[in-house]
Length: 175
Image (cartoon, rainbow, N blue to C red; front, side, top):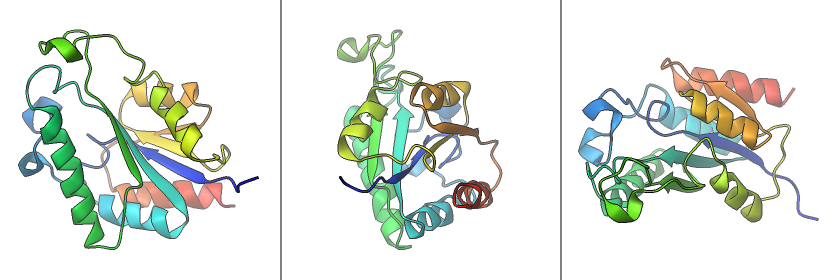
């Protein structure tokens, strides 16, 4: 049997980047501003053998604030930026849907929008998860519901230094 993996699931807007731009709808790299300690936190997770996964709702696509391709490009630029500090995100999953969307193909109620956990089910298919050491960090109650629905611990992040926040969590998990 394969060894179980520690998984750190991170929300994007409000956890990795400041979400006080464009009413929280960030779809272009020019609007993306890393939150304090975010790159260092990701590198720290990598060094401690965590798979770093981003799970994010991106209803700005359904609302036509930016396109699906814009978000894919933003995520590629995020990963490229992290490479410069020898840090990496293993996977990014994003939900483009919203029931109030104006783009017809994305206007729907889906199973990938948090707090539903379709993306966690995909993560489970890829990796054998160490549930005791894995966790979710988010800035919304829907993130905490996602963690609960996925049977992992959830931690509500309140916009201070992400590295300090993650350092504490990882050290508690490893002791």
